[in-house]
Image (tube, rainbow, N blue to C red):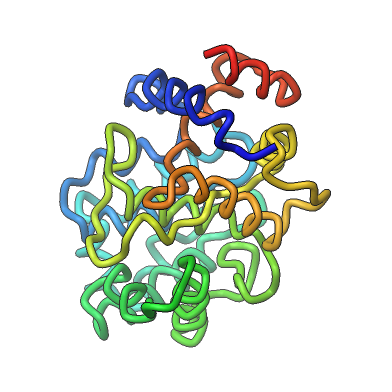
Length: 265
């Protein structure tokens, strides 16, 4: 069933939940403390990269790293040497990510910023007119970070390897979209190119809505889900992501009940 039959319900859900009062607990909340886009892109990269596992642990880990980096994370990252970053983050541990990996990621990001001015500008430089989604440009950005020394681990997955890259697409949503929840910060990339961040829960909701029939929450599934949402909101396919995830968290909604719920709104 095409998603257009749910559009009224999705818009109602968006209006209900797209408010900052519904953000906590979510690593997105850390971005609100940084009005400077340079700080925000560093904080967003950290928060999204560590967004796996229990949310209480995620928030604790992100807070620990930010405390180590000081009041201006961007200034610290862009002026510290790789060794100094490792020393600042020594002993940090988030599940199977340690401080050395985080320091390497931040040092690589600093190298990209020195060359392009910002991570967002680097991403935008790889967008071409014929691109239907952000994936080719994101793949190029990740390749540049890996070439600059970012770890080739779970911390920074490669879109070319077939992963849904949920955390990276979440980061792009935060930095490119701008509404009551997503603060934005990058201006060179259109929200129309965004992909829906697909994790296990979003995958279940997308299957219930008929946006995909695929059984794996991988890159191809993320493409199908994003294409389905792009069909009803071509200028902003990630528009409903936050509201849908809040519905599941706040109301403990069963994904199988979602179609009836949306059609009744």
